[in-house]
Length: 144
Image 1 (cartoon, rainbow, N blue to C red):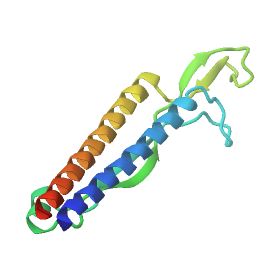
Image 2 (image 1 turned 180 degrees about the vertical axis):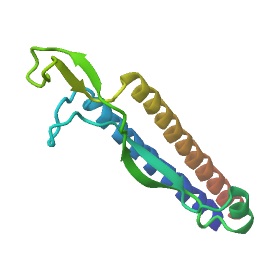
Image 3 (image 1 turned 45 degrees about the vertical axis):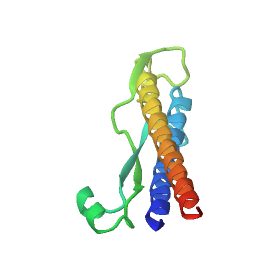
Image 4 (image 1 turned 120 degrees about the horizontal axis):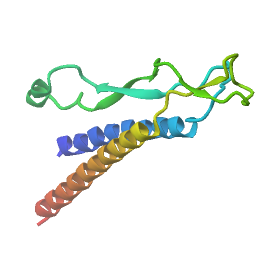
């Protein structure tokens, strides 16, 4: 029964990681037109790096112990690809040639990433619901 509760903890780590991914993607979309940040440069797209809590091979963990399974955030990194240049000589942020630097955020890519994060979040919720049903059925069998 203890391992059933550990499955809930593992899914909870996935929920937390995917929620952070959705937050970062939302931030990217919100700043897709931010031509100037505090340091005077255009906003840079950010992404979340995820990793397994235990870097051992997956099969080894299942054979030995599930105590260390789950996902964790390894970091949030900035995309260092160059900004998008747009000709707009009337813009106060335009350079000498009349171009402004726009963030390196592609809304379509962000939407695809958001759908992926949402589906992963939903998969973790489904795993939690299934585990809860198994725990409930196990308890009802034991009490009979």
